[in-house]
Each structure stands twice: as C-alpha cells, then as structure tokens.
Image 1 (cartoon, rainbow, N blue to C red):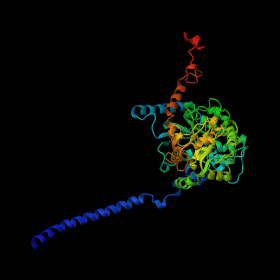
Image 2 (cartoon, rainbow, N blue to C red; image 1 turned 180 degrees about the vertical axis):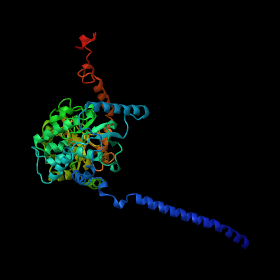
Image 3 (tube, one colour; image 1 turned 120 degrees about the horizontal axis):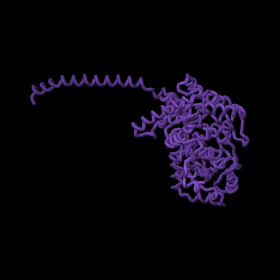
Image 4 (cartoon, helix red, strand yellow; image 1 turned 135 degrees about the vertical axis):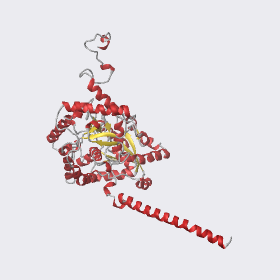
Length: 510
C-alpha cells in the first residue's frame, strides 16, 4: 500500500474519531448527572435509620414506638369513626358497602377474595390504647408483680402482646410498611375487616379489678355504638383477646366477633360453649420468651445438642396440664433426659434458653390450656418440639404443616413406661436432620417484629383472615335477612316451618 493511500485513509478517519469521542464524552457526562441525581434521591445505606431493621424485642420496639412514632400519630382524627349512635348511619353505610361490592362483583374477577385485604382501624380514645402502653412502659422495670401461680405479670403481657404488634404495623405510614397482604383504609365503607385496638391483656393485669371491668364495659359500649358493628353485629370485627383471662366479663356481648386467641380450650374453663370456633376465630402464636437461635447459632450449637429431651417449667398444672406431673414422674432420672421445675423470670428464661440450645428435642405438654409459649420457644431455639397436647390447635395450620417440624404424640402413648424415649430414639439421623432443617425455615413465621416482615406472624394472620372473608359475608347477610328468632345456626336439625303454613312433615319435625 502506498504512503499516499495510507495518508488518505488516516485523514478520512479523523472526523469520525472526533465524532465518536464527543458522543462518548456526552454519554459519560449524562450518566454521571443521572447517577448523581438518582443517588441524591435515594436513602444512603450508611444513613438508614436503625429502626428500619426488624426489632423483635417487645420492650425495645414499644419504647421506640411511644417516643418516636406516637407523637407523629397523635394528630386530628383522619378516619370516619362515628362518635354517636344513629340508625341512619347504619343504613347509609350498608348502601355504600353494597355499591362498592357490586362494582367489584361486575368489574374485578378477583372479588370477593383479593390481596391486599382492607382493614379499618378504629381511632379509639387514648385510654384504650396509648395510655395502656405507657402504663406498661412506666411500670415494667419497677414491678415484681406476679400472678397467683408465680408467673411474672409483665412477662405474661409480653408473651401475649400480639395486640401491640398488629396495631403498630397497621397504623404505620404505608412508606414504612413491608406487608403486601393487608392495607389500612380510612373509610368504613371500604373495609373488609374492622380492627379494635384495645389492649385487653395490659388492662387485665395492670389495673385494679373493678377499674378493669369498668374500662371493659366502656370499650364495649364505644365499639357497639359504631354503624359498622350494628350492620354486621360485629361479625367482621377483630378483637385481640389473646390471654385467656382477658375481656372475660364482657365476652358474651362480642361472641359474633373474630377473636385472636392462643387456643380453643375445649375444657370450658376459659371460654363458654359457643363463644369460640375455628370457623370465625384465629389462633395466633405466643411471642417467644427466648432469643432466636439464628443460622450461625444453629450451626454452632449442633455439636452441643447432646441432651435427648429437655423440659423446664411448672410440673403441676390444672385441667389438661395434669399430664405434666405424670410425664415428670415417668421421665425423671432417664438417661439423656432433663426434666426440671422452673419459672418464667429472667433467670428462668436464661436457663430454658440454654437447655433448649443443648437439646435435640423439647417436651411441649399442655398447660392449663392446650397451648403454651414453650412450643414457640422451642421452634425459635432450633429444638424439635415433642407435642403432648391432644386438643391443641396450631397457629396458621392452613398454611403451615407442623408434622414437618415437630413430633406429635398422644397423651395415652406418652405416659406409657419407656414409650416416649424409645420412640424418639427410633428416629433416624436423616429424619432428625429433616426436622431440624424445616424448623430453621419455620422460625421466621413465629417472630413478631417491627417493622412486620413478609411471612412473619403478622403477615400470616392477614393471609389466614382472607380465607374467612367469604364466610363472614355469608353470615353477615344471613343475619340481615333472617327473621329474628327463626333460627340461629345453619343446620337442618333446627329448621322451623312457618307457623302459618300446614306442613305434612310437622309430626316428624316436632
């Protein structure tokens, strides 16, 4: 190739090179500008508020809530909660609900079950909400108050604090919430459910008996005056009644409502016949009384789990819990088994936590009711629960399969000499590893936190609640159209013919 040709090519190349360089510089500059703008509009990781990280301690979360969040939430009422009684309000609400549901029925193929479900949170007077939270906050450090059987009162409140965790999440600004299964609405006509944010457990344990009963009656009157309550007779209202002693004096007036419970208790000691059922109510887990054993802890504790079966707690209980004494007598002194008396105080917590982390299996017998917090302590400790409670109802069992994480044993088998220990020793290493693996995955479902996490207990609560929605609408509409006193249950055996009609089946039905 001649020099002339080479020079011609190099000369012809220069304008293109300059053009490409200019375009490249422009692109880089534009990228830098856009990146700088987007970075300034995003929160820096180094500047994230520590409170954005999940907090699982009730006391820590409550302190942040009362001091940081509560002042911002104490604004003029933002919803349409009614402060007076009016039958006309009920009629107007019913018309608005019909318009909304009829529109969805014709336009939305996902109706009537859709996510997120819509929850209306009543703006109740502070005496039912913030004042009770402050009462706990101001007294939990100073008090050594205990129940008649020795349980620390404030520790019991923590274990049953589901009312706090659900409410704190629902009333948080949407920008701070992480759940997609539920959204708060501010108009009663838009709601699928109505949440009553009354702290029944705190008031039961920290107020004088008569003062507590008076507050219960006042809360009852306040809620039942609402148009939404009158429209459904409370069937779409949610009451957190998680401690079996709480709200007891007025329960008969809210028996149609949805109760958030620790169990069903078929003994009749805590709930009267007809008050609770799986059809309308929801079982929620206790708040664990021990710290979670995370992935690192599970890995480190695996070689140290040399105890076959562990139990620490009170062996003398009432009702179904009488089996504890029998199990204690049967298992006492057996090699590889630790059975000891203990309480729920701070020392008891550390002893139970250490014992669970050194054990393969944790004994979870019935207490005064079929459930106990011990089951959830075992789950978050990585200790395989051995459940001896024939009538226990599990939280979220429509979503979670407890056979994959626990050993379920009948009471009659468990008390047979040598049966329980032999059964546990017959499980293969593969079966134990599978249970432990599933247990590590399930623990997230029992950790209440702020902010509430996807697939945590708050999230599963609303997923389970969505499954009740159609049935609640059914019973609400039946209550609105059935003649009062004609029948109370959807059962053939209580059908009554019209008194003005002659029915040939009357002799058979009477």
